[in-house]
Image (cartoon, rainbow, N blue to C red; front, side):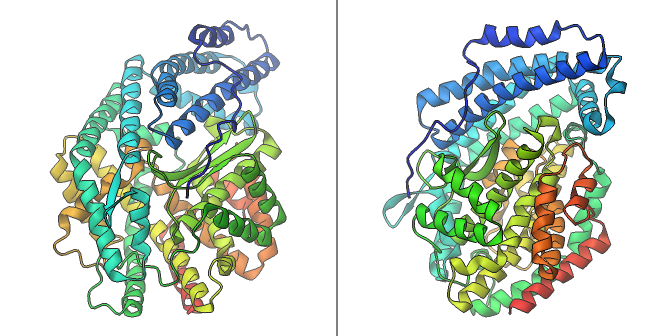
Length: 565
């Protein structure tokens, strides 16, 4: 399942090795005289044009590294960006933000176009501290170390060295013995790197706490709510945690009983919670996967397949698993090219199929947005919006899974599995969010306490119906396999919030498929300067995660699963 590596997918319009020349271009922006509101708008345009060049080059270097963490030259280029260019950008970003915020003309700018920018830049000025730059560089170095360790992780499988994602894919297997073997093999691999993971996380927690304290906050959680410019409060998050525990977990437990019965097992163990009740895997080669997904997208909307086929032809998809490739999957924008790149490191499995569809939701959002408004700027990116279209794409393609599962029973099982995933995307990220609230409001916790807290939260949420007796240590340490905790802290609850929106989109699709797809495209190409609520409204759904909505969507999800049964 290997794939040739194409490194011509991004445009390198600036040489980041020429540090003095890069700095001179940024310095030139600081020296511009702004004497009118039109001067300010021209200055903002010049700033954007420079920053998207830098962003595209850095993004390309990062993706190159994640595709091949063992290549010394690629790693050197990537580390130069992180250790030299990133600190330079942090220093000058603060100065550029100050220049902007001190301009007497900012109040004359159009509020709809620039209001979000002003709020974000004002919060960045509030958060910036010179002494945090080296701490943030160190944070990035630890994140890189995590990628290297996980990218090099292999597992012995029947006497053969296999990439970690391959063994992970065996958790889908219909044969219970294979699933159990895979679970223990993964836990054994985690145990080998556990001390490294603990050391990295211990240091990250302390670094992040210090960054927050330096900026005048009591803890990193409160700092991140300001840094992310969240349009909801800490208390809203705690209420959401409780609403899901109250209304979704009982439904999740009922669903577990159905799966337990279908599997014919007496006890529902962690490796039963992952079983897929259809043929496994749904494809064997990357080309087969891409052919099928293109067809599914085309049946939904011709534009969707057109963009996918374009990405395939232009080397913008890297989907196979291989040694030295970083774990996980993501979609990233290339703001100069107007393209998106999808990265995935998964072996053939139901999850890898769904993960590609998920990332294509992001990619299509990126293409639609670029065609309407040009490149999405950093301040416009809110994951509560982005994840709406990735989850939404999964559910819009729910009725086309027969492309990979032509047998009627397999097709129904695959649909049920995707709906079960909708449950997990409500539950799992919320548990991860709660875990991080605890970690960063208790920064002096020990590694042992961290494992114990993760086990406790897991049993309240996704593992509630699962018999974990004798596996407390394994469950407790499994947080180390989640890259979000290391690389994108507090990027969790966005999945759950957006899943509620995506379920509303599915509800609309079941009533009027054509209208729901048009609403998806309208929302995905909406002006990102609006509030999250306004963008959701353009998509035909509501930005609401209060108790009545959580309860209603949980009931809707159960109803759809019953319909398929």
